[in-house]
Amino acid sequence: MCRICSFVSNLVTICIGASRMNVFQLLQSSINASTLRQSVYANNIANAETPGYKRQDVAFESYLQNALNGTGQALMGQYHIPVGTDENSVNLNALPNVTPVVYTDNSTTVDNNGNNVDITQEMTLLAENQVRYDTLVQDVSDRITRLRTAITGS
Image 1 (cartoon, rainbow, N blue to C red):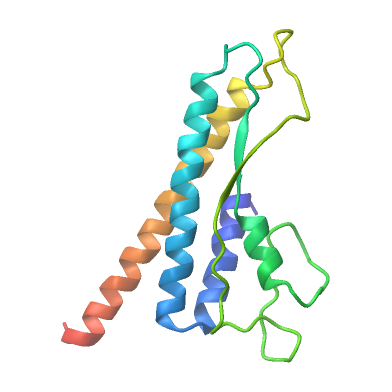
Image 2 (cartoon, one colour):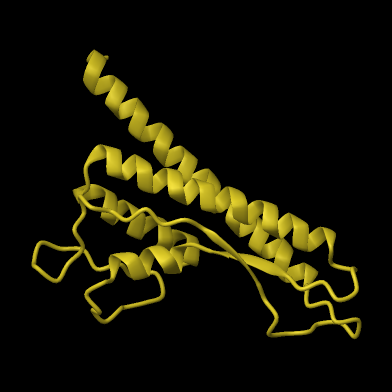
């Protein structure tokens, strides 16, 4: 399963047991992270030839996962979020407010000029992030449509 599918699948799993407002809050936070990430990747691409520029990225999913994983349960994969009804599982009605954080990757150097932007990787990440964003927005739209249908009956 691809990273995007796995992330969205876990969001859906979380959303099944959470209150509607918490679901929309979680989806909004995820959309905000994706929007910020798109801007960061575009900035990386724009600076691909800038001497000494270090690529940036956004940390969100790992922070969300850590916030939800306060129990220290073993993870089945990078995007696994344990959900259940026992005392060791996530409290779905108290989803944390996690904010995306921009960080600079100083660990590598791709060019002799000290720049570490790999344009191919950045373009791939940009496209991947666009799919993630589109999926999240579609999920919000579908949920609003279902709520509207439930309220109006049509």
